[in-house]
Image (cartoon, rainbow, N blue to C red):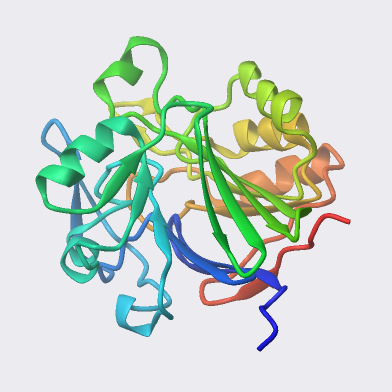
Amino acid sequence: MTPALDADVTFIGNATTLLRLGTFTLLTDPAFGPAGSRVHLGYGAWTRRLRDPAMAYADLPPLDLVLLSHLHGDHFDRAARQALPSTLPIVTTPQAQRRLRRRDFTATGLPTWDAREWGRDGQLLRITALPGRHGPGLVDRLLPDVMGSLIEWEVNGAPRLRLYITGDTLYRPHLGEIRQRCGEIDAMLIHLGGTRLLGLLLTMDGRQGADLTGLIRPRLTLPIHYDDYAVMKSPLSDFLTECRNRSLTRVRAIERGETVALSPAL
């Protein structure tokens, strides 16, 4: 059988996506609780889910690994903890690795700019941890460590896709180092929502999302993580309007349950 050479993403909800990159299948930030369920955000803070995920864990194909940007309740909820096999590899931050291993999950923590590779059928999957800051100033130290991720897929030594997943970072000019170090980005899954707690902005709103899109300049930008939970205050329309006003044209909304092809590098 000829190995698959297609690449696509299915948006499940919030930051949960299913990535099919050739022979590899990945799940990002698993959260499968239904609308109405509550998740803990730390320090006594909770939020309620407003939208059902498009799929249940039982609906997924066999997975090679889970990519977890950070250990927050809206990215790894109770439903996911109960559904994921403890033997399924999870790639995440070193901080989250320690906590997950105490719960008997198989987790690998990647410090910023470190990478791990997997090979199969002449194909290579490489994940590199990228910088991210979840909160402003000293507040960031009170929140879980967060990472962005660069996912590179190669076939027979030739690059096919370079995908950037932002994680729950705020926009900062130093994120331009990602393009400087990693080269041109084919596609970006950008976490938005303008999440606010106690008045503090903890994820990119529409303006910051457009700032990052203009900085990275990917060939395709797909916005996710923007209206699933009550703490999210910046709707998707904020981001789309900002991008339109700045003539950032390679931006595409993706609906829950929709699958979008990820154009391979040529």
